[in-house]
Length: 169
Image (cartoon, rainbow, N blue to C red):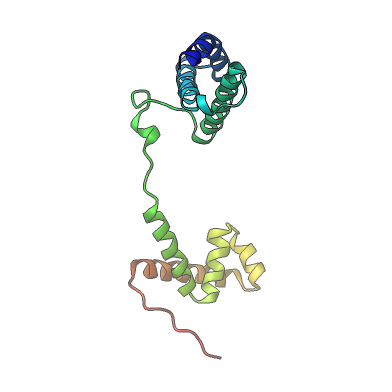
């Protein structure tokens, strides 16, 4: 243990300088050196070779690389005092997902001619004339199907409508 102290203790200032240069943050560098020293102590008897200096710097370097990669994945660390509630609060998305699934189901329950017009005009943002040209129907038919489709969709979403009757050919 005494030989470890004699070899490692003089390296601490150099390890701190290297850690600060890598992380550019004094507190994070001190934490990194602390973690490095803990690993040195834990692995002292299992080390290979006699060069304690390069071994210590290798441990420090690998820990720094891991922290930098971890920081990129996680983003900047901020204390609770530094942040406001609006920046960390997120609205729940479960209801949005349920509404989306409900809308998709309701669209599937619409008659095909209403669904096509509704999708072209409301989702794809085409004009009535463009939708009429694509579907090969008069513009007035597009407008009436769109109106009936929107009304039917609203009824389906509110649970007021029975499923549409399908024509049998």
